[in-house]
Length: 101
Image (cartoon, rainbow, N blue to C red; front, top):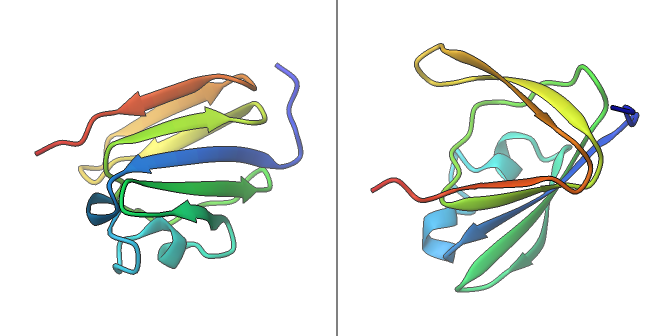
């Protein structure tokens, strides 16, 4: 896997009410230097994410989402319960998660 100097991801969330923009746990509010709103309406919110290797983000909440990797990246994620998982994506890969009720 060739590594880019900058991780670039598109994150698409469903439903403005679920995305909770403006809340204290919103990714854009937690890490405004890394996340950018590209589109937001009553049905969908599209975020761009950019960071250099080694950067960390604050824990945040995300509703149902689709993630699309523009560049390859590897990331260690610490879950709220302290469990750590390693995620690795090639450019063009995507994943998603349904909203948990």
